[in-house]
Length: 115
Length: 115
Image 1 (cartoon, chains in turn orange, yellow):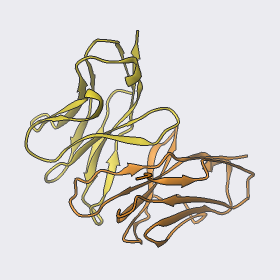
Image 2: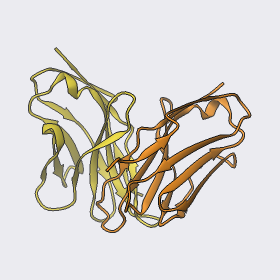
Image 3: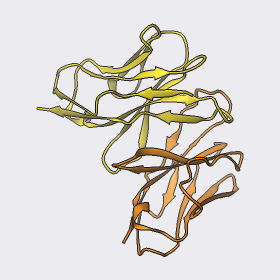
Image 4: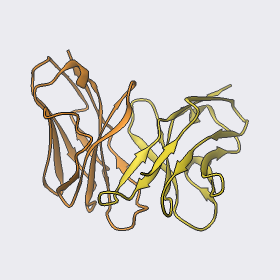
């Protein structure tokens, strides 16, 4: 299994531009999570999906952020317009649903720099 | 709400010495506890988990964790540290609210193993 795949691995953009981050979860996993990691705020859960349906988006910082999961094998996190304070590493993770002790599997992350 | 606390931002230990990374938890109901490790420029990797049963849980890379219900702790341990163990360690607890499939992470502890 290839694990969780994220693209791009690095993104540098200018303030005001639209940014789209992509994630392919592990096949068969029904839950998908988007996290953001910064030195100041640590690891934050932004949103998570069960069976392609958003369950909890309380961590999404503001309306500039949106996430979609059109099918079981693909999700996007979009920032429009981007701001310098959005600079962070964004992780996608997936896990099987069912028993509550299933661990999450993380992707390698996308390092976003907004100038 | 479920939560975990990692009281130490950094732990330093000499190679060959035992290491302990501390974690305490606060949950209602049965705790499902996890440890993850993050190496530089990488995503989080699952180390081990406690579900029920034996209080000593063994995981990857020689790590183990001891679940202590009376002290509400789940400390990560290793009998003999290696320089290659230097990384950021996260404790997490399964959050059973809102669908029950997300993890709440601690703030992380930076482990530095020196020669």
